[in-house]
Image (cartoon, rainbow, N blue to C red; front, side, top):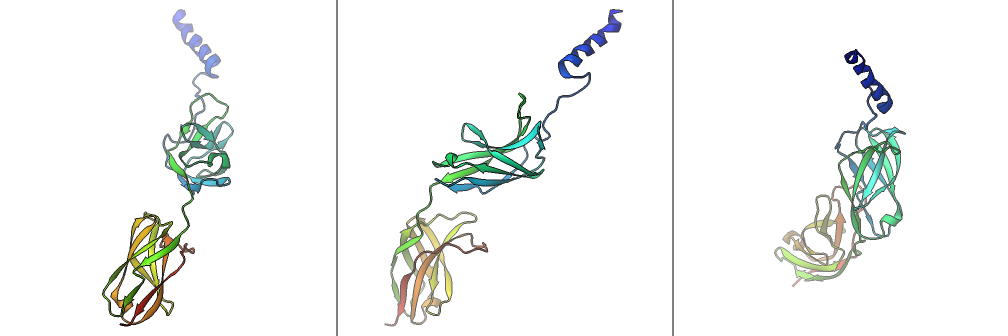
Length: 238
């Protein structure tokens, strides 16, 4: 008799403790470590609030299984998050989180906001709050002239705001001839205040009242890129 009723007693405890014999509790549908991308991935110190676009998969807007974006600098701040679709969220980084330079981890957590269970979390993407770079300027070019017929000439450009080359961000020197044609020069970034560039002999085959400028940004970008002021560079006859 005891063997007969034991399963029912066990099931009664399950009904009380879990809400049903054989039922399962609700858990996040987000995979344990999906890839996400974030845009933008940086802002300047002192920025007003910045809206992030977070792209991924399996995002949820269920009240008991909700995806939110988190800003983590050792302490976590859940950002005001808007669900756009199962593959996209937007979230607002408030100005008070960007008063100092910092590298924050951005990730998505999914679960019951009112529950006590653990959240499923995405991987992390770094969001950098950076000091605004110095203005892009040239103060001097040396030498500032060359003779007609000179061989390739290396010039040194001194200024501010020169940034070291990255995958999608470059700094290069432009020679603007007196006919307004522009020539990108082979450029080496020495430091944030110094560049070297090579003016090829072909640009010094005849007299030329040209200018030197510095440009930087993504070379394949469709938009306008920042340029420095211009410094004269003259190719003169002997």
